[in-house]
Length: 211
Ligand SMILES: Cc1cc2nc3c(=O)[nH]c(=O)nc-3n(C[C@H](O)[C@H](O)[C@H](O)COP(=O)(O)O)c2cc1C
Image (tube, rainbow, N blue to C red):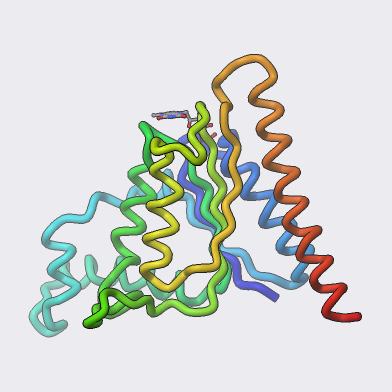
């Protein structure tokens, strides 16, 4: 049984390709681990604002010095971190917007990547405090950027998850979605096939371990 946190960041609700592929990945996870729980966050609906100084300072000031507004600001990040830590599987649906991740996803990351909570500073650099979490990243892009310097998403997300200690990361790509012709259908089919293959490989490993 898995505890799955499924985070969508697309603007277009259920029409979002990243959300659709990530949903089928979640379906496969549930098939593989019957009884799994799924929590969903729709960042497009949640209206998380950009992080500002008042909110950041509410994390470091002592609790008895905070007014009601600052307490609510601190609780927002605390609650998102508690939610993340109460799951063991993270599925991120990630559209490409202007060569980056959606700003709504960045607003979530800015609240869960917190010194003393999800990572700590050491003399050798930062060390992650999140253990035992598997992450799946499902990317949807109008163009094709994988393995080029313009793919800012993969490096950034794997690095920031790694900073928190989430190092077991699988990435799935649907690219060329806006390039016309058959590219869109082929790309979605390719990404779906990748999801199937991923779980067929897991199943093979399970069968092998059980034999
Ligand atoms: C505001 C905006 C900016 C975009 N910027 C890019 C871009 O820089 N590169 C790209 O390949 N596609 C870009 N696209 C296209 C999206 O990546 C593409 O439509 C993708 O399907 C979005 O993911 P989704 O279907 O999961 O919502 C952009 C789309 C929007 C709405």
